[in-house]
Image (cartoon, rainbow, N blue to C red; front, side, top):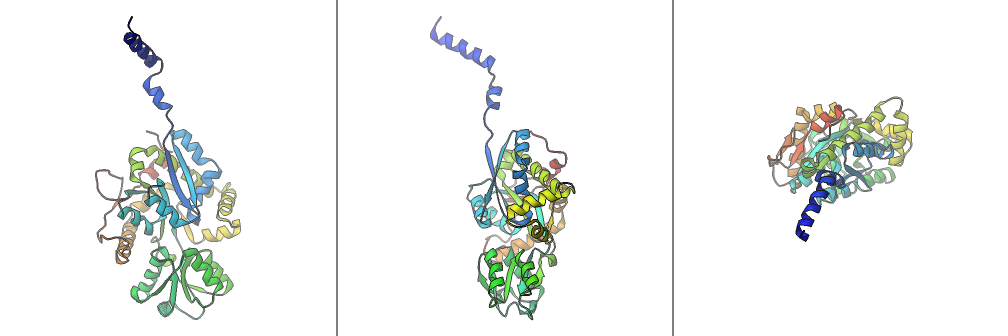
Length: 349
């Protein structure tokens, strides 16, 4: 018997004993990295990690989704834009920027909407009508900038009348609390309620005045949605596992303890932060919101603001709402189907 014939018979025998499908099943799942940073609405990610919800769903779906916490929010957004991570927790404001640069992006869930957690602080004696009379400290082109522009609009003040002083967002709040020479600042909690409790400032405009306009999202690269949908399912389902722990009265105290510890504060202080944030703990909230006229109107405003500030070049930048369609060239989608699947617990393909 020739060596070639022996080789062929050997290969056939091996194939029969070890089918190709069995060998393929042993191949490790591709790692999918979701970036997030500390913010009230994103703290369920810490619960997912601490309580092992993501590990459990990875086993169920045969996936390898990992969370990566970033100390700096914009660092996480830039990592997503650069393709260093596969998904990121970001605001609706920033979602246009990677997409407009060519990163095909799909928002798969809404974490929360700010409900007073972002605001405009002024010193005692000043009103919203005075915000253009003093330097306005904020992080330029951020949600704080967007909120300040909306505040100015409500007071009949043109955006170019504002005297913007650019400063990292968290530093803005700290500076307002420590430097009385800063008269006007756009920032977020805990700085808002700390200034009010200390009697050093008043909130004259907040996200409560523009309900549903400051939105926190989790956005995936469309390539992951198309090629590894089970990774998205595992993440979304695990996220709502964590949210169930928040909603359940029996486990809420433990959930708040985990989130507070992750945010570097006390449970009592964290509950104050929750007061300015409307968490979307139920999949149906994302489903309804992504299909609503409200989010479409908000994204139209965000697109206009982004174009006016030269963050995007196309004033008609296409934003789609509904199940992501790879054949459609739109670069930013709000896709509710993974939240729909999470209601049923998700089903692996």
